Length: 151
Picture 1 (tube, rainbow, N blue to C red):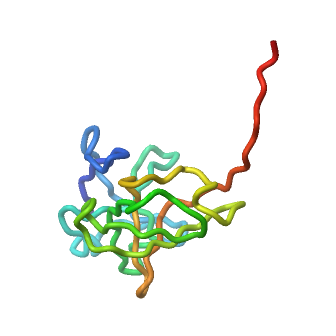
Picture 2: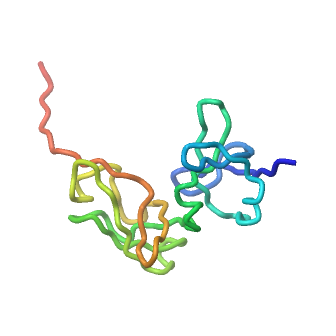
């Protein structure tokens, strides 16, 4: 019989939201694969990168899973500043281990001028590759604009 995991989505505060749903497949190199043999690697309370495909089914994105990477919650220690790194608390705001998180910014080089905006305590999702922590969200650089309203 096919194996599956039951999941709930997390809201922007990291809390479970909505009804549970089954994830029955894993996308490996763009090809759907059953979870048979993979489920023992998944533990209760693991955070998995899932997405709902055009066929209406939920799948685990294998990008991090196949590398054995675990996704964690992290909370920004301060608001964003210049550069592409920020110190965050791992797993628990204000008391978790401090880690330096690296961010990818499309069309930009500074976190303080990109979206989404980061403030002290903002929840992000991160994964560790080797000794380096990475944010799973790709940020978008922004440009300042002064707007006028026609009268």
